[in-house]
Structure formats: structure tokens, C-alpha cells
Image 1: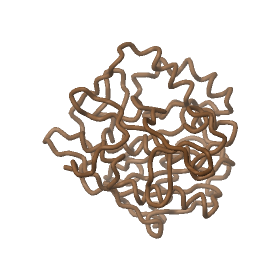
Image 2: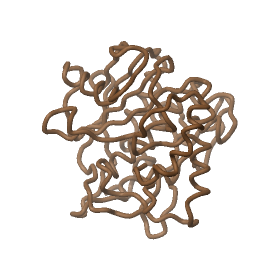
Image 3: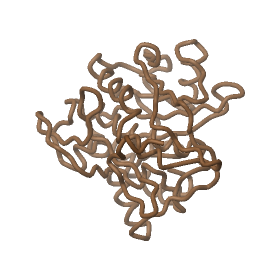
Length: 307
């Protein structure tokens, strides 16, 4: 989500602080919490949005995911996210992004590479339990400069913080952005997705906010909500990495239009809702706006239509 909505977001600072968020400067390209997202939809006119191409770059190549786990995570928690990252590329859900292209007519590919053994890094509180300032770019730079992860202009670096880490949040569940300052001469794309504490489940968990579930498909509401948020942010990163490509006239990107919309769901054995199977696990992750003449929030795009 882009800066064009800053005037609307300013009114929600009190919402974020009331939920326990620490007030900070607004990052761009955010996934808004459930209540703020509903309020946004009331304020934007028009029943059917139109996504527009603004001429900028999209990520059409062989893109790579990298995970930075900051803080304390159990083996089960990291395995939930690692399984999601390993199986997102090639899936019908991510395939929706292949309806987007660049100025030369090159389409995004339904491919993402990720291996937990080589593409993840565990940062044991190198900046402490309270993150301030430009913590996002500093932590990504730390992981790269110290050789824990490679420098990759075709990569998306995902910074996931544990619930005991205080992040300077305002009104977001997650966000993505890019920086030329992380690695000299290279444009690095990254996303930040905090694992929310229980007090924020109603804002960032689709299971809790949308379906009023008492649990989530993998039995960890916070981690499952991170997967949902990263479906949003990874999709927006490949379709609008620099804030110059695909978004509506109101600044909504492909994930914003469909935020907290899940389409067809099933009830998994623990009683919660899910709408996707990635690898050997179930997940509830949002739909993505399909770029067709009519446009709609698509849960999947058949993989045999891959470009």
C-alpha cells in the first residue's frame, strides 16, 4: 500500500496505539489490520476497483525468498513458515500474480526458490528486544554483510520478529519496501511481518477476525497470520517492487484490494478455517487481485495457465 493513503492512515494512529502498537513513522505498502481495512473500504468510492500499470518494473525473473527469523522461534513455528515458503512458488495461489507484466510484456513467473537449509537465518536479538529507527534495513544488511544470506537483487528478504520483540508499529500487520542502501549498487526488496502477540490476533489473524475461530490451521494463530500477511506482501513485492508498477488510483496494490478475503474455505481437523494446502500443511491465506478485464479476488489460478 502506497503513500497516497497517508491522509486516511493518520486518523488510525489511535487505533494502532490502542491495540498495543507503538506509534512510529508510517511505512509504505502496508497490510492494514482488519478493522482499519474495513474502514478504508467504506471511505473509497466505487464498487469495483481497477488496477493500473504505472510503467515501473516487476519481478519477472527467477525470484528467491530469504527468511530472517529475529528473536525466539520454536522448531514447529519455523517449520510452518518454511513449508509455506518452499511450496508457494508453483502453487495455484501464487499463480494469480502471473497475470501481471512489465512495459516489455514480460509476465511474472509462477516460481519462487526457497530452501530452509540455505535461505534462512536466525538472528538471536542482535538489536535487542526493542527495535527502533531503520531496524528493517539494518537487520537485512546485517544478515547479508555477515555472510548469513547472499546479496540478491532478485530476492525478497522476509524479516519475521517474535512476539516478545517490540517493533515500532503504527497500523500495519506487515509491509514491504525496497532500499538501495542495504547493499551498495543493488536494489534490495524486503518485507517485515511481525508474529503478533495474542492482544493483536483480532487485527492480523483472518481466522480470528473473519471467522471468529479459536485456533488456526497449524495451531499457532500468530505464525499462521504471518503466512497470511506474507502471501499479501510477497505478491505485492513481485507486482510492485519499487512502488512504480501495479496499483489502483487510490494506491491499493494486488494484496490490498483483497485483504482478509479468502473465498472458499474448509474446516480442518482442529476446527479452524483453511483455504489452501501448501506442501503437507493447511493455511488460511488471502486472495490476490487477478489482472483481467473484469478483475476479481482470485483464490487460485490454474497452474496449467502459467506463462
